[in-house]
Length: 340
Picture 1 (cartoon, one colour):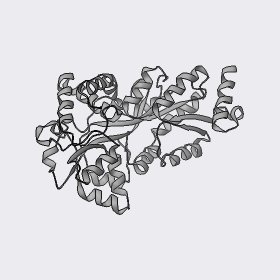
Picture 2: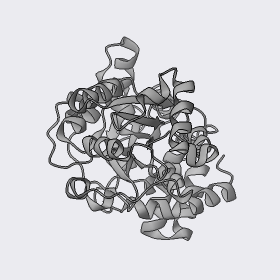
Picture 3: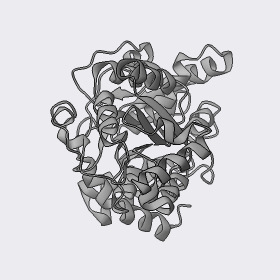
Picture 4: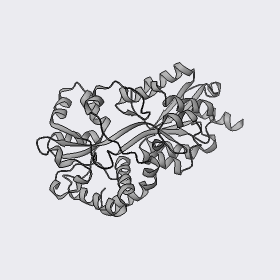
């Protein structure tokens, strides 16, 4: 009881809330590294359906994980949400998650999109984006093509230390082994048009401007540009083409957004309800229609014009646990070859 009161008072102090008065199963304390404005509707709908109030702390992944570790048994956090399998795996390696015990989640989320302790609730594809004036779709049909000498000076990429690139290389390790994965990374590095800088949207804009011929981006960044009414974004979309890579082999690399209940969660029932809510049709549509991600539940119907315009594709069904297992090795490879 004393630990619980400490948790409540601590959460109340930093959240500016009534702390102990609100610390009950009618409250969910959420630590999230998702920074999407559209998630507001997702959280509001959960409260409307359940009466459970969400106290939310947003921050960067590493900062939130460090905070949870430092708070220890007195942590007020019930659920941790983040993006990318690499980051979820890191939280799991730290022993922060409780076992994921939910028949509903097991039934709705495909097995390759969950582990024993956490689950994906939305997916995003790592697509190839190219400049239509400089290249043809046939030039960049696969991730492997980006390492070919014909693309020397044509490739823009973000940092090798970023989890999106770590997860992609981890998938290549899983499919082809460490040696082939390193050969691929060296080939891509040798084709850089410039040193890595910026995020995925910056890479897309650089491709559209002709600074480079091709890049890799998470699909929802491209969908955002496609749905934008800004003239400058429309020009970007007109200048680029989309390729679903590796359709003849493994399928396009899929990454995730997901989370789990923390071992020290003070509101375990509320946490379970929230995670199960994220697997509901209604929440799944928020991910898709609001933030341009694909539902993790395959049966959910969505209404997103940009995603529809992208067309259908073959997705890689490599288990996210396999990605998690290879993330550390992926970082070692990037470090070894000098992909900063």
